[in-house]
Length: 223
Image 1 (tube, rainbow, N blue to C red):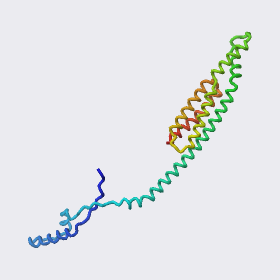
Image 2 (image 1 turned 135 degrees about the vertical axis):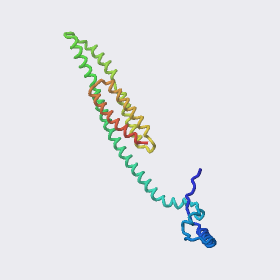
Image 3 (image 1 turned 45 degrees about the horizontal axis):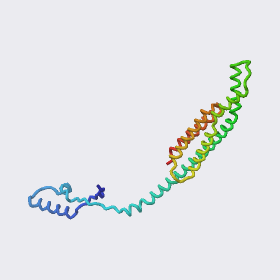
Image 4 (image 1 turned 120 degrees about the vertical axis):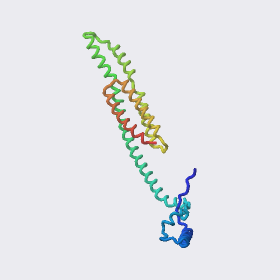
């Protein structure tokens, strides 16, 4: 149902005057005392009429166009400013994550020596006065290093970070895409932590996760 036009109450003055004349005539004919006042006329409901008021939409729009346009412009400016601040925050955190990834790559380069030293110390502690087979030791260390290789995860993580940067430059809605990338980066660094088995690397992974959590919270504000 379409909304009705607002109503306007008006006085039917000619009819009210006729009522007044007739009431005075009636008073004279019946020789009634007293004064005829407004209360007597108010009992005649039909002296008030209701008329529909037509709205002029063109005039209404002319009055509202200016304020509405200004409000929309302010809203767009506010969202643009907020978007730029979010972008700067994202770029800063991405840079920090890349720095941590570089540190992890450097730490992973010393894994071979660390494994060899650790394994040698354990063997010597368990088997005193037994000569260590260096060839066998090198094979075991090589196996452990291969098992803990994180090169692929590092490459994929950096690729996701680069993709994140690219999507920040687009004009389309990227909120869901960015959220997906955050999940993928989180998955990769989890794998890095579990494969590397290094306290130093795990510490960097924790820092990366902290940055990712802050990014994830901000991504919720993006369409």
